[in-house]
Image (cartoon, rainbow, N blue to C red):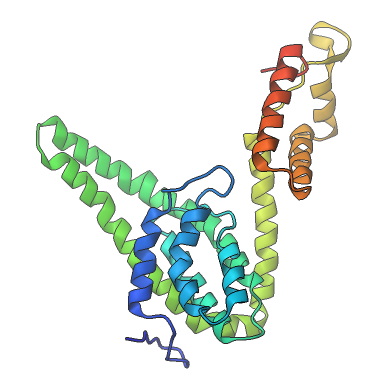
Length: 280
């Protein structure tokens, strides 16, 4: 059975079975979590049957699709199928169009995963799971076997509803509005905004998650001492963190493996702390 939507192009290459299978495979999103790509391997696993079907006679496009979906990915689990649905629609469009800009697929995926992660974590982890835990724990405290059952149902029923509803809605939106977005020029604006947002998020993460405090004293003593850290903070707060991040990106561009960069960072950090250059 071919899926039909309200778009002018009613015949699709993907069926309801394809989208359902994609949604079920998406349940493995945290099964192969890794430090480099986070949920990328599971995302590629989720999209594998879709791209294999769409590009079965287009080996070069198929190869690029595999590589595309092995890029970094991290999002809330119940809302990720919505992104998968949109991506599936874009891959479908790409398989039927010669001049489709494949970079927009990665851009849309990257731009959506951040906001949806925040929304999904707030709703499912910060609200539904907390309430479900409270209700289930209350029942368990009375000795009722319904405690764990109520907790599992309280969380998983809305979570799985969001998964399947999101997957089909994402696919529908992707197929219905992609042409309009591209013709209006909104896609270029969206890509530019996504790049700006990504830079802001990365900058905030650098400042919040990297800890560097120099212990070297430049001049003076006691409370009036001028330390290297205070000097750098006067120039620009967080400049050392930015420098370390820039060095890591430079090494990545030079094709240095991420694990090697992590090892170098650990060794240098330990030596700097031991010699008093850094304050722990």
